[in-house]
Length: 234
Image 1 (cartoon, rainbow, N blue to C red):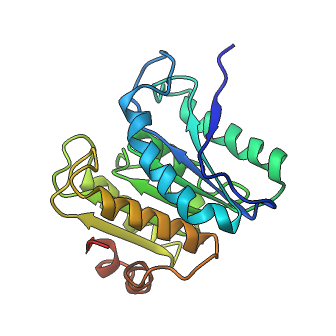
Image 2 (tube, helix red, strand yellow):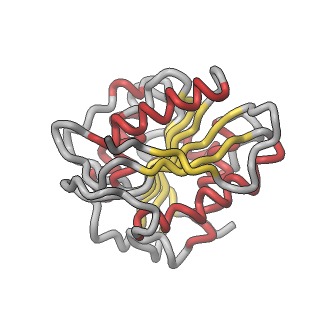
């Protein structure tokens, strides 16, 4: 039987572990091929995980990349959602009830947002998330949510993520959405800005440092001003 896997990222967290960040990579609508660590969606998220680990390990943050069983979303089974819940249970088994931040790209963003209301999750970041109108959102009531989308996006819908952020903003006052000008789905043109945003959001959601001013202001502004914020370079 194929099992999901949490790949730990160096530098490793100092003991005791005070919190965790799980990074979820992208995929495709359908597919039961193995989601191995050599595929581009997985490899693209390695720098994100390393950036978080470099900033958080000395503060006790355990950072891991979730490797799904399969490459596809595979409705109605929603395999990445099942795998994300397995990861949360695995973290509880290893570390107890530590707070967890989920960071997902594309399909991984959709999976992270689907389980964002689960026990122990204190923050969710969806990067160029694959979302559709009608995506469930009420379970994120009171949650801390970050969404970022490039304005050159061609694979997922910035309009759908804007709609989704607006829905979540009706049930949470900690929602921010950024527009990454000049970048698209691969998040490569302005990689440093993406990595900095995610790292500082994760540490803020874990309560280890204040949110960056841009995120705090966006959350305070709410809908509409806080959901279409141009992302500046760090």
